[in-house]
Image (cartoon, rainbow, N blue to C red; front, side, top):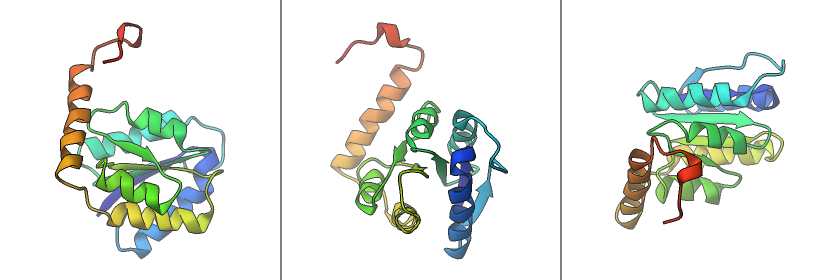
Length: 158
């Protein structure tokens, strides 16, 4: 598989490990930055990873920042991306099977290295589920396409 990987400065060290783990698992890792620990902004790298997935350059993406939350928020703004912040193998399996996530986000300051490695392995090794899961993901996709140009101020609960 082709996996795009990006991080901000807070996720740089874990990103380097993720790249190694991916190669050890036989995947093609695409390093989209950052290249060092100089301060930078996670939305830039989350966007790059999300675009690589959305346009077919990568099958999956991994974004890493301090908590993994901001990268998930940024990546999810790209149409076609379903990013999930995962902290356990159970969350990773659920994100893939139930929610068809195609981008994994990790919080470098929130997850132990061994756990991160296990989460990555499970995320990439879990298939997207069909049936009720596919039906629900189709509803998520419908929200994405029907609200692309709606401003947050005009949004109403449904």
